[in-house]
Amino acid sequence: MLQTDANIVKKAFPPRPQDSNKGSFGSLLSVCGCYGMAGAAIMAGKAALRCGLGLLKCALPKSIYPIAAAQLLESVFLPIDETHDGKISASELEKLLCEAEKSTAVLIGCGLSVSEDTKKIVRGFICNCKKPMLLDADALNCICDSPEILTTAKAKIIITPHPGEMGRLVGKTAAEVNSARIETAVNFAKKYGVVTVLKGSGTIIASPNGKSLLNTTGNSGMATGGSGDVLAGIAGALLAQGAEAFDAAAAAVYLHGKAGDIAANELGKISMLPTDIINCIPVALKEIT
Image (cartoon, rainbow, N blue to C red):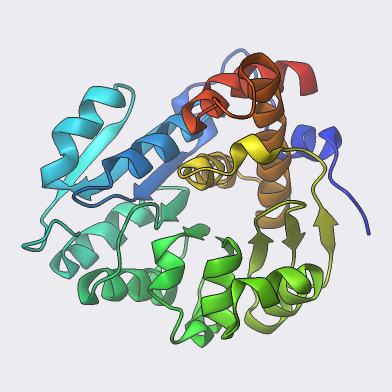
């Protein structure tokens, strides 16, 4: 099976001419977070900003806006009306879709939570958004009872499930998914027409046309809550800068693992955190490019 390497990262990042401006490098609409899950939105946003993104726009519940704004000084924010329990309200769907059309890519799902409102939002984006999208975490849990909705998408989509999320999408246990990782990822990508990133030891990146890659970077120190949010932010930033969906996914996985390897070397696998991976992205990019 073909493997990822540094060249896929070089291919995914656009050149940066001297006369560039923030409009040259895309804008990412991040629809993430809920009350109690501000960190997911923050980590995804920080990772995206470390990857050359021109503009980050964070749409999140008003209740977590003060927390996120204090951590993401570089982002533009869209504080969104929320339900009584702190989840993004479906009443804001049209506003969010309008903002998506003014962006070059969309990231949705990190810390979003699963409710009737968030299900309507995720489904609304899949059926109506014309900009490339990355669906992570709860965006996938929101459609696990009807994954066929992915076939109605008007834009290219990347999904980034861990084995448990993939299991919910295909009606299997995480153990069953892990026993046939390549087959599961490739079959899902072909059936539903989405670039599929099956996370875990030896992450698989599969495209709808049957192409697949095995990732060669990363380590067990990355097996902690928040690491997936970092990956989603990296891939979202590359989508926003114009990379093709498969290239963005493969490059993000390799870069994420490379930054994780640097963090493990510096801090040890036991003590490293997802935020350490973010902090190591610049070092990883310098080594690669």
